[in-house]
Amino acid sequence: MDRDRIRVAVISDTHGLLRRSVVQEVQDCSCILHAGDIIHESDLDELALYGSLYAVRGNNDVWQRGVKDLAGFLRFQIGGVSFYMTHDRWDVPHSLDGVDAIICGHSHRYSEEWIDGRLWLNPGSCGRARFGGDVTMAKLTIRGGKITAVERIDLEDGA
Image (cartoon, rainbow, N blue to C red):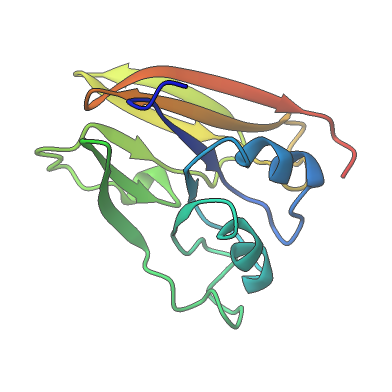
Protein backbone atom coordinates (compact mmCIF):
# COMPACT_ATOMS: atom_id res chain seq x y z
CA MET A 1 0.00 0.00 0.00
CA ASP A 2 1.31 3.44 -0.96
CA ARG A 3 0.81 5.54 2.19
CA ASP A 4 1.95 8.75 0.48
CA ARG A 5 -0.70 8.46 -2.25
CA ILE A 6 -4.04 10.26 -1.91
CA ARG A 7 -6.86 9.42 -4.32
CA VAL A 8 -9.48 12.09 -4.97
CA ALA A 9 -12.78 11.52 -6.82
CA VAL A 10 -14.05 14.55 -8.76
CA ILE A 11 -17.69 14.64 -9.84
CA SER A 12 -20.25 17.20 -10.93
CA ASP A 13 -23.77 17.64 -12.22
CA THR A 14 -25.40 14.59 -10.67
CA HIS A 15 -28.76 16.42 -10.87
CA GLY A 16 -30.40 14.07 -8.37
CA LEU A 17 -29.06 10.90 -9.99
CA LEU A 18 -26.25 9.39 -7.93
CA ARG A 19 -25.38 6.40 -10.08
CA ARG A 20 -24.29 3.16 -8.42
CA SER A 21 -21.28 3.14 -10.75
CA VAL A 22 -20.21 6.53 -9.31
CA VAL A 23 -20.62 5.24 -5.76
CA GLN A 24 -18.40 2.27 -6.65
CA GLU A 25 -15.75 4.52 -8.19
CA VAL A 26 -15.48 6.84 -5.16
CA GLN A 27 -14.90 4.01 -2.72
CA ASP A 28 -11.14 3.81 -3.38
CA CYS A 29 -10.78 7.55 -2.76
CA SER A 30 -10.21 9.29 0.55
CA CYS A 31 -11.67 12.61 -0.69
CA ILE A 32 -14.63 13.41 -2.92
CA LEU A 33 -15.16 16.75 -4.68
CA HIS A 34 -18.61 17.63 -6.04
CA ALA A 35 -18.65 20.71 -8.27
CA GLY A 36 -22.37 21.42 -7.96
CA ASP A 37 -25.82 20.75 -9.38
CA ILE A 38 -26.41 18.14 -6.71
CA ILE A 39 -30.19 18.58 -6.14
CA HIS A 40 -30.61 15.98 -3.34
CA GLU A 41 -28.91 16.49 0.03
CA SER A 42 -29.20 12.73 0.57
CA ASP A 43 -26.68 12.22 -2.26
CA LEU A 44 -24.14 14.25 -0.29
CA ASP A 45 -24.94 12.23 2.83
CA GLU A 46 -24.21 9.01 0.95
CA LEU A 47 -20.98 10.30 -0.60
CA ALA A 48 -19.75 11.44 2.82
CA LEU A 49 -19.81 7.81 3.95
CA TYR A 50 -16.83 7.09 1.67
CA GLY A 51 -14.47 10.01 2.26
CA SER A 52 -13.97 13.65 3.13
CA LEU A 53 -16.50 15.56 1.05
CA TYR A 54 -16.11 19.02 -0.48
CA ALA A 55 -19.16 20.35 -2.36
CA VAL A 56 -20.29 23.66 -3.86
CA ARG A 57 -23.73 24.90 -4.89
CA GLY A 58 -24.60 24.79 -8.57
CA ASN A 59 -27.11 26.94 -10.45
CA ASN A 60 -29.76 24.21 -10.11
CA ASP A 61 -29.19 23.90 -6.36
CA VAL A 62 -30.30 27.42 -5.43
CA TRP A 63 -33.92 26.32 -4.85
CA GLN A 64 -33.20 22.92 -3.30
CA ARG A 65 -33.53 22.43 0.45
CA GLY A 66 -30.35 21.07 2.00
CA VAL A 67 -28.02 22.21 -0.79
CA LYS A 68 -29.07 25.81 -1.47
CA ASP A 69 -26.96 27.01 1.45
CA LEU A 70 -23.73 25.42 0.22
CA ALA A 71 -20.99 27.91 -0.62
CA GLY A 72 -20.71 29.06 -4.22
CA PHE A 73 -16.95 28.42 -4.11
CA LEU A 74 -14.44 26.73 -1.85
CA ARG A 75 -10.70 27.06 -1.30
CA PHE A 76 -9.11 24.08 0.43
CA GLN A 77 -6.03 21.88 0.52
CA ILE A 78 -5.62 18.13 0.15
CA GLY A 79 -2.18 16.59 0.60
CA GLY A 80 -0.45 19.92 0.07
CA VAL A 81 -2.36 20.71 -3.15
CA SER A 82 -4.39 23.92 -3.04
CA PHE A 83 -7.81 23.75 -4.75
CA TYR A 84 -10.35 26.34 -5.87
CA MET A 85 -13.76 24.86 -6.70
CA THR A 86 -16.87 26.51 -8.10
CA HIS A 87 -19.68 25.32 -10.35
CA ASP A 88 -19.23 27.60 -13.37
CA ARG A 89 -15.81 28.32 -14.86
CA TRP A 90 -16.91 31.92 -15.49
CA ASP A 91 -17.03 32.41 -11.70
CA VAL A 92 -13.33 31.68 -11.21
CA PRO A 93 -11.54 34.84 -10.02
CA HIS A 94 -8.65 36.33 -11.97
CA SER A 95 -6.32 36.15 -8.97
CA LEU A 96 -5.37 32.55 -8.33
CA ASP A 97 -2.25 33.04 -6.23
CA GLY A 98 -1.31 29.83 -4.48
CA VAL A 99 -3.95 27.73 -6.29
CA ASP A 100 -2.73 24.48 -7.87
CA ALA A 101 -6.03 23.15 -9.24
CA ILE A 102 -9.33 24.69 -10.35
CA ILE A 103 -12.36 22.40 -10.32
CA CYS A 104 -15.63 23.36 -11.99
CA GLY A 105 -18.66 21.75 -13.60
CA HIS A 106 -21.75 23.21 -15.29
CA SER A 107 -20.91 22.51 -18.96
CA HIS A 108 -21.54 18.74 -18.69
CA ARG A 109 -18.42 18.24 -20.80
CA TYR A 110 -15.16 16.75 -19.56
CA SER A 111 -12.14 19.02 -19.92
CA GLU A 112 -8.65 18.80 -18.49
CA GLU A 113 -6.08 21.51 -19.15
CA TRP A 114 -2.79 22.51 -17.58
CA ILE A 115 -2.50 26.31 -17.86
CA ASP A 116 0.45 28.14 -16.28
CA GLY A 117 1.21 25.08 -14.15
CA ARG A 118 -2.35 24.80 -12.81
CA LEU A 119 -4.84 22.05 -13.48
CA TRP A 120 -8.20 23.24 -14.80
CA LEU A 121 -10.55 20.26 -14.49
CA ASN A 122 -14.20 19.84 -15.35
CA PRO A 123 -15.16 16.20 -14.65
CA GLY A 124 -18.20 16.48 -16.90
CA SER A 125 -21.58 15.17 -15.82
CA CYS A 126 -21.97 11.88 -13.97
CA GLY A 127 -25.73 12.29 -13.56
CA ARG A 128 -28.01 12.31 -16.56
CA ALA A 129 -26.32 12.58 -19.94
CA ARG A 130 -27.19 15.95 -21.44
CA PHE A 131 -26.37 17.96 -24.53
CA GLY A 132 -25.15 14.81 -26.31
CA GLY A 133 -22.26 14.45 -23.89
CA ASP A 134 -20.71 11.44 -22.22
CA VAL A 135 -21.25 10.40 -18.60
CA THR A 136 -17.89 11.08 -16.94
CA MET A 137 -16.05 11.79 -13.73
CA ALA A 138 -12.37 12.03 -12.80
CA LYS A 139 -9.90 10.77 -10.24
CA LEU A 140 -6.76 12.54 -9.12
CA THR A 141 -3.69 11.04 -7.53
CA ILE A 142 -1.74 13.30 -5.17
CA ARG A 143 1.77 12.45 -3.97
CA GLY A 144 4.26 14.68 -2.22
CA GLY A 145 2.14 17.81 -2.51
CA LYS A 146 1.64 17.45 -6.27
CA ILE A 147 -1.03 16.07 -8.60
CA THR A 148 0.76 13.16 -10.22
CA ALA A 149 -2.13 11.72 -12.25
CA VAL A 150 -5.51 12.74 -13.64
CA GLU A 151 -7.75 9.92 -14.78
CA ARG A 152 -10.90 10.37 -16.84
CA ILE A 153 -13.56 7.81 -15.92
CA ASP A 154 -16.19 7.06 -18.60
CA LEU A 155 -19.36 5.58 -17.18
CA GLU A 156 -22.17 3.69 -18.84
CA ASP A 157 -25.26 5.83 -19.43
CA GLY A 158 -27.47 3.32 -17.53
CA ALA A 159 -28.02 4.32 -13.89
